[in-house]
Image (cartoon, rainbow over all chains, first blue to last red; front, side, top):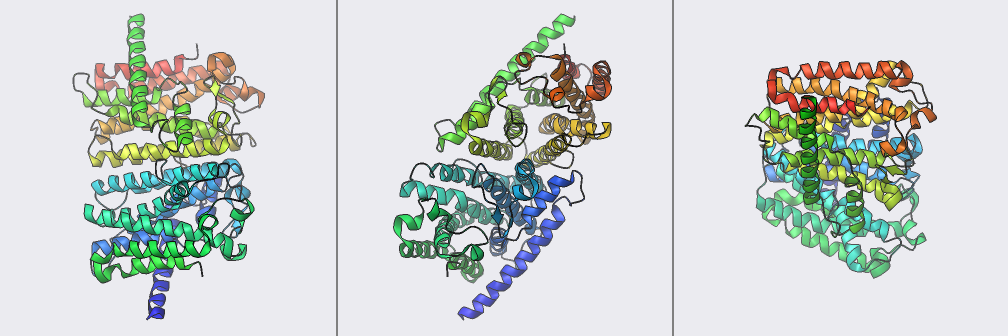
Length: 303
Length: 303
């Protein structure tokens, strides 16, 4: 049974990643589009690998909410692709010398290493801009489109979204954060975009306010669990396994979930969060199985 | 007569700038909103001065198209404020060490000088993100909102928008541009956002496709004229008059409109462009007078 689910999940992940790669390739300006350098830099970072987890979460949520014999709503892969563009823009800027100063990302040169710092700053900007251009033309009613845009902008914004998390994360390198601040960083930096991926998928499929609340609760729990596991992986895995420099947090004496609570308690907390998060999806019965499997998959990367 | 128009225009500019300042203050997260540093950095740059020309062009266009006894459509100042946020985000990133490396902007320390480079990168990002959050909630029908979002995202994008212009401008410091490339830079870097300001104002007021075409033609002409005059001002004005370092283009031997065609021919070209642009607005009769006056004002800064 465990193997069967795992095989089915492998299929979901592989099919989803292929669909998103093809859609990103179709949507993004081509490498031969003037001005060339910016479009090549955008594509360099978008196609540097990555599991396309946020798009897959979005598409599976839309499939669950639409409830049409397992069919995903037409065009939802375009929304999914935007979530990957936004994730990539945040990585491109996060890797810059003034921020994390990383040379490698997913085993390849970071954008500023390959194209120079000025182009990397503008390529990150452009991925964000192009995301909203794409969202404005999604194949769902305009009412849903503006709600999706609001949800995604908040999830990547400053108050309790992605940029807010990045800011506090940067500041916490100088001032040791409390457990409360660390939770804010985790919920905002990674969790908020994961939640926006789920909620926007639900809105695309015509979800109600009750659906949105359930998806938001599921996303908040799983997003926090995902980031806790990320901190654990930084300690327990090699650079090769991670596709980026391992042990950076320990080397920089950065406060992380495992440094505050230990590895075992961190893993236990992540598992509890996913369990509680999945309970939010029980009203959808068997249709929620893939999303639940995905949530467990996110934290099982630790093994 | 000339003085009368000028007084009336002064009023339009002063009233418009005050309304935009108040609206930006109301919309933007307060300086006491956690995380503090990012919100203070955003506000530092947004409130560093500036004439709020793009918002005023947007609001005056909406007033002209709405044709309701000179009343601007309710809430259009929120759209106008977004145009200023986007303009500011581009300045914050343009001023960074990896791009133009400017210490002063409108006579005040640039964002990275005041808050550090990491915060400045994220503050620019955040101003863009918050712009789309604000657009998603504008007080016009959802159909108009998604068209406005598309128009603005294209106008600030890579293909023939603001970022495209910045990229080619940066590259032209190394490879001397042809007159054709220089016109691409000018049209894209500054003209595209000015055009988007006009067109989005027209869409907010319920403009038709015919209105949009006229506004786009007016914007393309006046936007190019505006940037030509900007190049002239870099030569003819002092740093104090400009509020930024003057003579930078000459010092860096940068190719500009006056370096290719001379100052007098550049001014003549700008005047011709504004004249032709204004003719596009003739069908609106007397209602178009303020916009026409604004167009002439934009290039009369040269005196």
